[in-house]
Image (cartoon, rainbow, N blue to C red; front, side, top):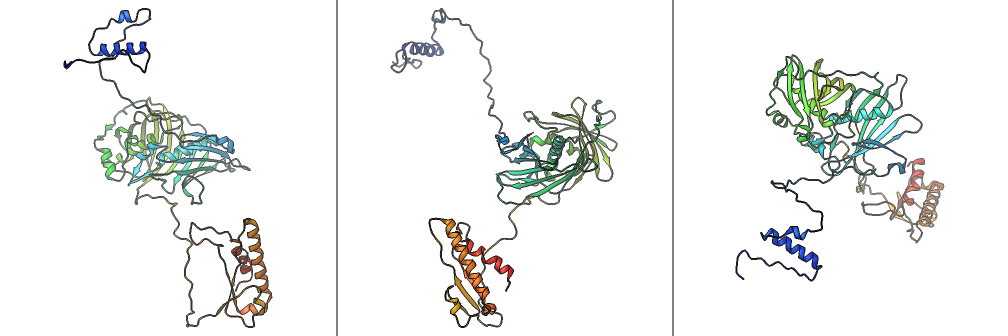
Length: 474
């Protein structure tokens, strides 16, 4: 058969039931234009026609968001911090202080990758405010009286950063000390902790905040924002889409009014005030001078109060306070109060930010010992053992005493034997006055790792003489 439109449709298939094969064949014939009497086919079945859309199917991604894996933290005596940037909270025993901990990475919090400053991803200053507010909620304080940022928190491209938010006990004035620390890595591997910010929390008396109902503000002049974020990028602030939230701005005298919003799809669940939203409000600070500039990074916050949570868009009024400060009145999209900041001081970024908890400048290494003194005299040395030490008529400058190798199936017994040998040798050496002019050199094997991959099963041979040397120097 050579007809170009011909098709072979099998009705009997050996790998499936007859009814299924016949129904599949009818479907193939129908899509090829053959008229099938479907009314007869569906006799006795409750069916109806359904209209199909006339446009192409819309493809939409439905993969779930990556969330931090926390697990059952109550099994280790911790409580949930109930915050997207934190994992656990625990009350410090013996005080009413609180420690909140978490882990941040670009894999668990991918939106943070859009906070790019001079090539480094920084935890925005607004996130420190968010964490301070959360810490205050934990201890019943509704006012962040002070918050000073000391060092930027740089997030690595790969891996994670552990964070700790510590709230101290209440003092006689009702204030609580607040500190932020971070350390790189997933586990407590001995890396240093860096302090990033300090602050003070207290009860503020429940101010209701100010509203911004008249919008746009009367008598204000609109600011052209074309190329605004291109200018920010040229100044080193390479913000991504999540942080490019400034939508409109106006000036009236010294005041700047701004409208900011989060992009669609950014979730605010669990946040008091999403850091990207508050950070976008701060971008308008650079518009106060008329030309606009890249501004700086938040340095010092004072008098921060939160009045409502869950906002996805904001109206903001920025008012200068002093030479380098600005006050913020923050409302939601309807003008209802959201937050108040009595004063915020920004500082320019003068260098590329980097993590502060890298490898130490110092380390432990093996170095060769000098074989001769400055005047060219070569010290004498003689190898011996513990039994022959008492019979030596004349002692050299250095007496070299090799430790016996202690190996066996039980490492604990071998360690005890090595420790007893070292103790006996030390006592014998100190008991003889002839040894005062000589040095005892104890040669060990397997007592100290000379390379990272080596073990040290005979470490007791080194540990025992050390307190003797400390008590009898020389």
